[in-house]
Amino acid sequence: MLVLNAGSSSIKFGLFRRATAGAGSTRLCEGQIDHVGGAARLHAVDGAGARLLDVALPAGCSAAQALQRLLAWIAPAFADVELLAAAHRVVHGGMRLSAPTFIDATVLAELRCLVPLAPLHQPQAIAAIEALQRSHPALRQIACFDTAFHHAMPLVASSFALPRARTQAGLRRYGFHGLSYEYIASVLPDVAGRAVAGGRVVVAHLGAGASLCAMLAGRSIATTMGMTPLDGLPMGRRCGSIDAGVVLYLMQEKGMSAAAVSDLLYRDSGLLGVSGISDDMHTLLESAAPAAQEAVDLFVYRVGRELGSLAAALGGLDALVFTGGIGEHAAQIRSRVCTAAAWLGIALDATANAAGGPRLSLPGSPVSAWMIATDEDAMMMRHCERLLDADLPR
Image (tube, rainbow, N blue to C red; front, side, top):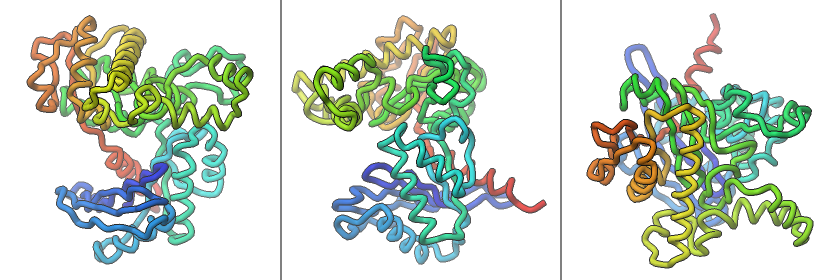
């Protein structure tokens, strides 16, 4: 089973051998194609992390061409493997697509309709799906939605204060990073214990895209992203929550077009916009520039504010879990967030935090803190298996 996560300039992938009687699924390899459309490069490691491949692809190759190179490498490298299905991470499923599903013409048409709600992500997923349809028309393809985990949020958490007809037409809070949150919910009992996992937990998926999710007994009850992945925390290049009046002002008073405002909010804001230096947290943490520090300060402040909001939605807090690129690798950010959240009952263990956990809090901390590496590929593989099993002839 091939799992694909197509981004604006990269394609992450994983190849899994399906579970058989007496044995679980095996990760055969994983990797990434970087700089698609430019100086593209394909690299892969095996299930143990040993390098299998690191090669340059033809300059300027498209996502479809890059996928063909990947499949052309997989075929001889894993000659004993029969490709059963490909699963795609699809950011937006809208109102109807609320669970992983086989992709057909109807599903694909619906995905295209949702492009305006996830313009940085949806087109890339569709391009990967269509490329595989052309090259491997008999291959079963499955869409796994980042919105699905949040689909059953309470109405009060998913609604905007808009006229009811607008809400019923789909203007609502969907939430994202659902595959990551679903994976964390699935492994949290083994890492932190069933008592913690069954309680009031906030998971912080912090990376180039960032959000928080409030979970009660492993289910999403509130999240920081809204109708689109633009909402919530400031991100690498996305602004996060903003007064809607700012958008009206830019268009009505400054004469900016909708496309120009979209570029501003999706591509030129966030850590990059505030710092004027970089959208990369590691770069900003190493910089002595005051603007870099301001960008980091704003990010930490907003995480703290949203954490307090979600704790209120939960009626208290039992645990905080960090994941995502920043959450997993930036100990300084974890430290600052936990220190600012001492009022909630988090007592940080500085030594454990520096070592990367998994437990980050002191044994007697009223609220525990954890770091758990996410694995969206593994989550997609599980969904792929379940769908294939359910589709077997009886």
